[in-house]
Image 1 (cartoon, rainbow, N blue to C red):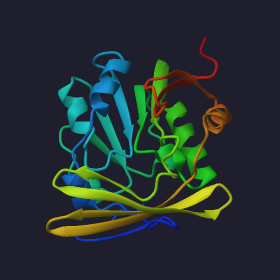
Image 2 (image 1 turned 90 degrees about the horizontal axis):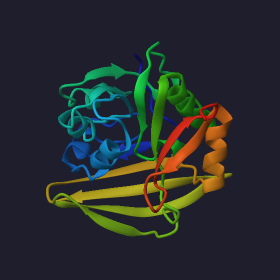
Image 3 (image 1 turned 180 degrees about the horizontal axis):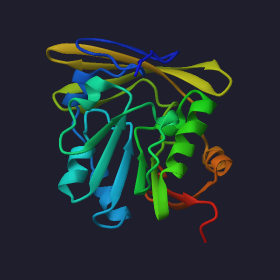
Length: 231
């Protein structure tokens, strides 16, 4: 598969850089948060999970440890080389067509905020098309003030992640610039993000035939969605 840089996305720093500007070595250093526990509480035990945009397996590996069967998808071969114990698939999310169905489809890492509306629709259609009867989609959203509280920083392992800027570059689209500083290396990532209010997010789901089943966190950043025809 030919891998092309996504327009408006780029990154700098040591090692391989993915089409959306992520540094493989950087993401191998960033520890996972409590998201695997939240996922485990929100879906049936032992479910089959299609993880879209798995990266180096930061969530894949904890989900495997919790007894789930995971198929991990990413468009970066260098990312997939770091994944252990799961079936891996090399593909952009928006064009994926496995002809298979899963109990859970996972779209984390704020991917639903893709700068391109066509890409976002493609990702959400992929979620719906790969969902088994009675299954659900788990989606991670940006926080309501994610683009407003800038600059900001947080600790990541023995380094610091800084959101340096979030600037409008088109109707409804921001260019976001990150810096990750570690004692021995610095990486940057620039990507496009389309902020979505709750109403806009729910409309985006409705466009492809999904609806919110439940907001799983008080801040609404994790959502369980199901087919709109589900009663």
